[in-house]
Amino acid sequence: MSDAAQPQTSKGVVWDLTSYFNDFNDAEMRAFKEQLKADIAGLQERVARLGSLSAETSADWEDVILEAEDLEARLSHISSYVGCLGAADAIDERYAQEEATLTRLMAEYNKFSVNVLHAFKDVDDDLFAAFSARDGIQGAEHALRRLRERAGHTMSIEQEKLATDLNVDGFHSWGRLYDTVTGKLEFEMVYPDGRAARTPISQWRSLMANADREIGQAAFKCGNQAWQGIEDVCSAALNAIAGTRLTLNKYRGVDTYLYWALFQSSISRETLDAMYTAIHDNIEIGREIFRTKAGFMNRSGIHWFEREAPLPLKNGEQFDWQQGVALVDQSFARAYPGLQRYFGDFINQRWIESEIRPGKRPGAFCTGSPLTGEQRVFMTFNGTLSDVTTMAHEVGHAWHSHLLKEMRYLAQEYPMTLAETASIFAEHILAKGIYTNDEISDAQKIHMLDADLCGAATLLLDITVRFEFEKAFHDARLEGEVPVSRLKQLMVDAQKKVMADAMLEGSEDPLFWASKLHFYITGVTFYNFPYTFGFLLARALYNLFEQEGESFLPKYEDFLRLTGSDTAENVAKRSIGADLTKPDFWATAIQSLNPSLKLYKELLAKQEK
Image (cartoon, rainbow, N blue to C red; front, side, top):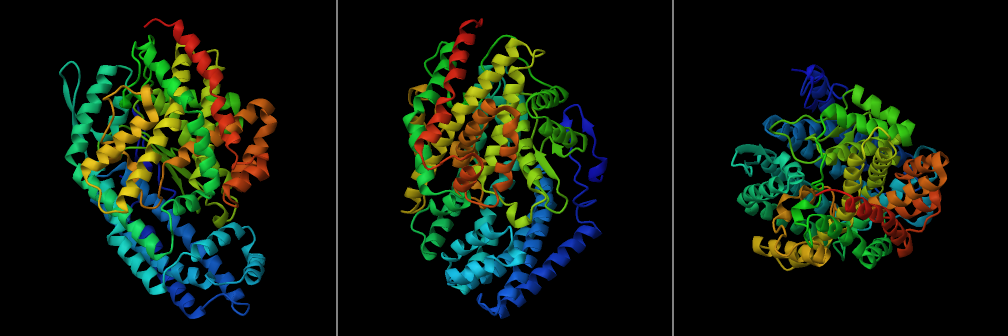
């Protein structure tokens, strides 16, 4: 059945991918791949003969950059398509094989990139400035500055090309292995009433977030039995991914494992330290949110698995797909009409995959094609308020890319730190839209406030746990492979350190390092902290929106359009005049949670338990 024929169902939507290709591996797609392969080979040959950038070769190098930009856009197009297919059906081996094929094709492109990096490695400032000023380069200056910085940390051409080849069947294959194993993973869900059901792991997180704590507890226990069954595979993958990175860092002259995380995030260490200084100075705000939640249940702290679970309030409810869409639509309409119109197109064109079915990978993401200018969202809609928030979050990503689509491709690539700003800003709009909607009951508004605040506490505490774990793991990995028992201990230590008395003693999750996909993404290192960064930056932006009203939205859209054209610090300074290197900026964003926390306590005091 072609993608266009896939139906919408009461369980959600099956996305339409036909703007990529009519069908997987049809004649059009095969021709597209063959042309890509030929063009990459041709560009490799040309660059190998060209030599380093000089005044004499500047025109030729300008042509190369333009050809490479076109190639990257085409690679992004087909990679996005195959990634969508593989996420929606992890059982079909054709998609996994195609992902491996594209990895090899990308490796060939990366060999070309090695020659480009070396061409710019020792270029003096005057020559680089003159090259960056050429007509065809306009709008890509930031991308070129980043290319030059990467060039300063390269091995010899032979070593870099060998590393590229080894990445295909080594480094990246560990991430593919994790995706394949977890995509097929199921667990025996034994409900509190004794009923048992074989359940895809993609539904595990939603079950743990059930308002019925007995169901959540059962899901946590049963799901972790499945994760324990593959803990050795996960450990091998995690050790291999980190070990490869650390070895390459040594040969490339990189002296800290955080270097590439900062580079990929387009921030300085000063900015990262400023954010975490503010977090630790104000950490009691996040803990108090969880303590308040626990107090309503007559406990001193929450269980780790309850971070995203709603309070067991009366009148709690699940949402069907149409209700979830309506909540997002109405909330966007009240706060940001332009975003609401785009969301309407998104739903009507079936650019979202949300149906519950076996074989889907866990998690959610937004992807898209620079050739069509369209975005796609992947998720599994199980009916929780968290799922509604995920929908708004991922559509926020899509809106960001939509605003960038008229810019050249090299100015569309933005770091995660700024990508998460757009998605979390959309979450804030959802929350405010619900709070100001008279048609929505007070009970539902309390549910939203609970989700909003606990989401904030999760980003401040849970993500900080992940950051502390990753640092401790990398420190240990520098000394050799880290066994499963040590990984469990590092995770428990991080949870206790950050959560403190906001989490019940003995309720930790020692296998969180195995079940969290983000630790296994080979294309990005330290994938987690950008979520906190984006949350706090989005909160600062939203606070300005609250103060200035609709007149702020053009500034916000300027902010988003700049994200592929400068560092995070400069984007903030140029669009809203903020200094991200100062802890006070981040502290103000964290402290702005206090009024909502006060309201949360007042409303809970009036609720029946």
